[in-house]
Image (cartoon, rainbow, N blue to C red; front, side, top):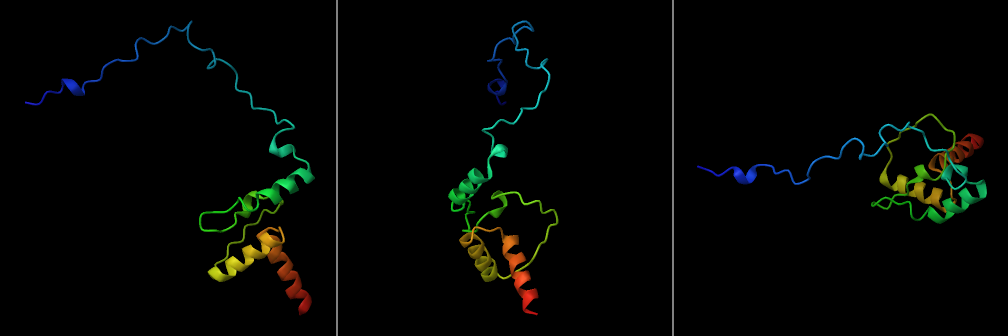
Amino acid sequence: MANLQKLKRRNTLGAPPTPEEASANLAAPEIAPVPTQSSSMARSPETAQTVREQGIEERRVEEGRIDGRTLRKTGRTVQLALRVKPSFDHRLRQAAARDRLLLCEVLERALDTYESAR
Protein backbone atom coordinates (compact mmCIF):
# COMPACT_ATOMS: atom_id res chain seq x y z
CA MET A 1 0.00 0.00 0.00
CA ALA A 2 1.20 3.55 -0.78
CA ASN A 3 2.37 5.86 1.98
CA LEU A 4 0.28 9.06 1.63
CA GLN A 5 1.70 10.81 4.68
CA LYS A 6 4.23 12.66 2.48
CA LEU A 7 1.43 14.22 0.44
CA LYS A 8 -0.34 15.62 3.47
CA ARG A 9 -0.13 19.42 3.82
CA ARG A 10 1.79 20.73 6.72
CA ASN A 11 0.97 24.05 8.31
CA THR A 12 4.32 25.82 7.77
CA LEU A 13 2.99 29.37 7.97
CA GLY A 14 2.07 29.34 11.61
CA ALA A 15 -0.95 30.91 13.24
CA PRO A 16 -2.57 33.92 11.53
CA PRO A 17 -2.12 37.33 13.18
CA THR A 18 -4.79 38.59 15.53
CA PRO A 19 -7.14 41.34 14.25
CA GLU A 20 -5.22 43.90 16.33
CA GLU A 21 -1.93 42.92 14.68
CA ALA A 22 -3.34 42.83 11.15
CA SER A 23 -3.14 45.79 8.77
CA ALA A 24 -6.08 48.21 8.68
CA ASN A 25 -5.92 48.68 4.91
CA LEU A 26 -9.08 46.65 4.32
CA ALA A 27 -11.10 49.07 6.43
CA ALA A 28 -9.70 52.15 4.62
CA PRO A 29 -11.92 53.84 1.99
CA GLU A 30 -11.11 53.34 -1.67
CA ILE A 31 -9.91 56.62 -3.17
CA ALA A 32 -8.83 56.95 -6.78
CA PRO A 33 -5.45 58.61 -7.30
CA VAL A 34 -5.51 62.20 -8.50
CA PRO A 35 -3.48 62.85 -11.68
CA THR A 36 -0.39 64.95 -11.05
CA GLN A 37 1.66 67.12 -13.36
CA SER A 38 4.13 64.27 -13.80
CA SER A 39 1.50 61.94 -15.25
CA SER A 40 1.36 61.32 -18.99
CA MET A 41 -2.10 62.93 -19.21
CA ALA A 42 -0.76 66.31 -18.11
CA ARG A 43 1.97 66.57 -20.76
CA SER A 44 2.22 69.70 -22.78
CA PRO A 45 1.80 69.33 -26.56
CA GLU A 46 5.51 70.03 -27.06
CA THR A 47 6.50 67.33 -24.58
CA ALA A 48 4.05 64.86 -26.11
CA GLN A 49 5.47 65.56 -29.58
CA THR A 50 9.01 64.96 -28.32
CA VAL A 51 7.95 61.71 -26.66
CA ARG A 52 6.29 60.59 -29.91
CA GLU A 53 9.37 61.43 -31.94
CA GLN A 54 11.69 59.60 -29.57
CA GLY A 55 9.47 56.58 -29.15
CA ILE A 56 8.33 55.96 -32.71
CA GLU A 57 11.18 53.56 -33.40
CA GLU A 58 10.65 51.78 -30.07
CA ARG A 59 6.95 51.10 -30.76
CA ARG A 60 7.44 48.10 -32.96
CA VAL A 61 5.83 44.73 -32.75
CA GLU A 62 8.01 41.64 -33.14
CA GLU A 63 6.95 41.37 -36.79
CA GLY A 64 8.47 44.77 -37.51
CA ARG A 65 5.09 46.53 -37.71
CA ILE A 66 4.77 49.96 -36.12
CA ASP A 67 2.19 50.20 -33.36
CA GLY A 68 0.57 53.58 -33.96
CA ARG A 69 -2.21 53.12 -31.39
CA THR A 70 -0.15 54.51 -28.56
CA LEU A 71 1.23 57.52 -30.39
CA ARG A 72 -1.57 59.89 -29.45
CA LYS A 73 -5.31 60.25 -28.99
CA THR A 74 -7.15 61.80 -31.93
CA GLY A 75 -10.80 61.94 -30.97
CA ARG A 76 -11.75 59.58 -33.78
CA THR A 77 -14.46 57.19 -32.65
CA VAL A 78 -15.50 55.13 -35.68
CA GLN A 79 -13.47 52.01 -36.36
CA LEU A 80 -12.60 51.01 -39.92
CA ALA A 81 -11.25 47.52 -40.52
CA LEU A 82 -9.72 46.65 -43.88
CA ARG A 83 -8.18 43.56 -45.43
CA VAL A 84 -5.19 44.58 -47.53
CA LYS A 85 -2.16 42.95 -49.09
CA PRO A 86 0.92 42.74 -46.86
CA SER A 87 2.87 44.90 -49.30
CA PHE A 88 0.26 47.70 -49.05
CA ASP A 89 0.28 47.45 -45.25
CA HIS A 90 4.07 47.77 -45.23
CA ARG A 91 4.04 50.77 -47.59
CA LEU A 92 1.29 52.49 -45.60
CA ARG A 93 3.11 52.04 -42.31
CA GLN A 94 6.40 53.22 -43.80
CA ALA A 95 4.76 56.39 -45.11
CA ALA A 96 3.09 57.07 -41.76
CA ALA A 97 6.34 56.56 -39.84
CA ARG A 98 8.35 58.68 -42.28
CA ASP A 99 5.97 61.64 -41.95
CA ARG A 100 5.17 60.96 -38.27
CA LEU A 101 1.45 60.53 -38.99
CA LEU A 102 -1.17 58.07 -37.88
CA LEU A 103 -2.34 55.47 -40.38
CA CYS A 104 -5.76 57.10 -40.55
CA GLU A 105 -4.16 60.49 -41.32
CA VAL A 106 -2.30 58.98 -44.28
CA LEU A 107 -5.54 57.43 -45.54
CA GLU A 108 -7.43 60.72 -45.03
CA ARG A 109 -4.83 62.58 -47.08
CA ALA A 110 -4.95 59.89 -49.76
CA LEU A 111 -8.75 60.21 -50.00
CA ASP A 112 -8.49 64.01 -50.20
CA THR A 113 -5.97 63.71 -53.04
CA TYR A 114 -8.12 61.12 -54.82
CA GLU A 115 -11.24 63.29 -54.59
CA SER A 116 -9.45 66.45 -55.76
CA ALA A 117 -8.09 64.57 -58.80
CA ARG A 118 -11.58 63.58 -59.98
